[in-house]
Length: 230
Image 1: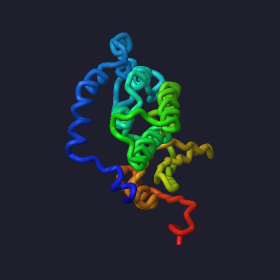
Image 2: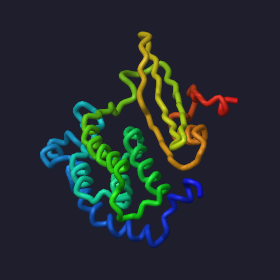
Image 3: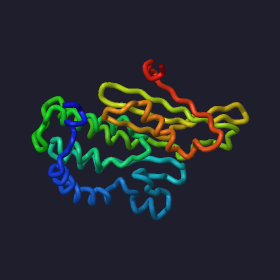
Image 4: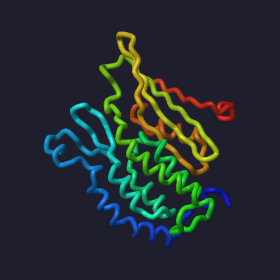
């Protein structure tokens, strides 16, 4: 049985997970990941695509305190691992290293045929606890919303891809050049997948999904896979 088959969820199992998370999702949506009332009254923080936008400094930031505490209140089971992973809504991929670890943990639990509501063994349990602690560390991550410091004379897209026996990833950066010779690089988007797909295919689709590719924009794809390059 391959990894995709091992991770398939039957309709009955899926229904149980959806039922178990419906009320939790509603309560979590009202938690502190949403800007506090004092902030919204001053119009300094707006929630956008699962992220918080601080409009004065023009930064995106995250608040996972409640999610981390909620995760610690859950039993350490495979069902909880899936539930917590589904609650991290971050479509731009800024937090891919953390969210990918959650996906890999769930995949390994499927491969090891751990029951949905059985307590996690020692090694997965340690990883589960580590991931919960890492969520709070993500509160320190701030990302500039604007790609440019001023009007660039030219910009390029640079996409990177890499793979391991557990996951594949693609990430795109925008490289801006300015009249004074300055160069600035910003993270645009990233994507990770634990299923068996080619990393180069992920990257090609990721870059193609960006409106920035319209017009005469130089685009460079990077990979250290000799097989893919050949």
